[in-house]
Image 1 (spheres, rainbow, N blue to C red):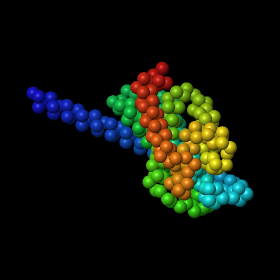
Image 2: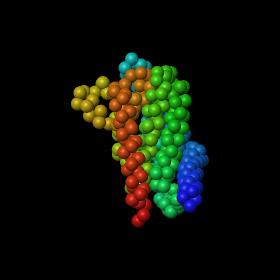
Image 3: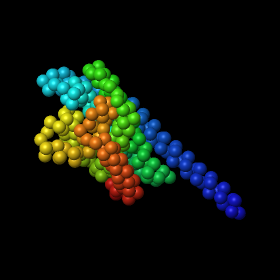
Length: 271
């Protein structure tokens, strides 16, 4: 009897593991298909924006600014522009996709499915990471037409871009959970995300700022992400790289826990 119960329990565990794997893959494939299907909205705009930044800030303004931390200005801002594309696209993909599921009413199908909440969160976040990496790769290719990108620490580059994509994908998911209208979807990117990105050291070194402004800048998490990524390419950073990774890891853990807790409680979903 005990053997029968054990085998029955094992089969149930196998079935649940299969359900979770198939469910996760289904969400991920759907998200990837959405990214590819509307590539003119998901991938192309960031490439065009990067070209404009390189032409205006790099070629025109950069000539007057001169070298930054011992590097050509265009070379200095390239990692920041790549990271900016990763941040905005990781966030936008998840907030747009999950809010679309809420708005269209088909999020209810996920809620009544046997998929655990943490699998649903991982599926949507995975889609955001995929878009962030795709667009980041596209902007990297664009940057090679304007400047030379040296690679000092490839593992640092990979870790920084993955953690950053995870952080903002999770942030986009939480935004989508609370949002009740398209205006609320756009509020955080407009009034919080964009200022943090522009003041995050994408276009300048904070060593140019007065002391009080440097201290204030260190409270901006985007500054740490951009500088960790830049360190991977150029070997220079305005912050301690280990601290930057500690901050990113802490954000991933906290935001993931919050996202799963909101799904479990049904916040913004079961009204």
